[in-house]
Length: 114
Image (cartoon, rainbow, N blue to C red; front, side, top):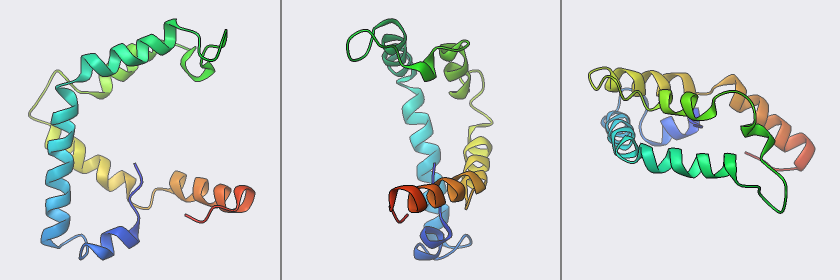
């Protein structure tokens, strides 16, 4: 996900109570989506088995075991490490170089300012 320095500044910086609350809500959100992981997997499986727009399958979902990989991302085997996992994801997302490159691409080629 995208987490910019501007957003962190708006909520008072990484040492603020609001940032701590943001982290708490992200952890709660992760647990909430995990409750519905079967539904998410079913929706993705439907895109793997049903053509989209006539006879086309989504090329991004053709390779490898998409469902197995997606299921792993829910980290269903261990609840004790979820807090650390989510906080690590937040740290990795913070001004991530991939996001910055994509934003530059959008700006240059599409005229979309991010």
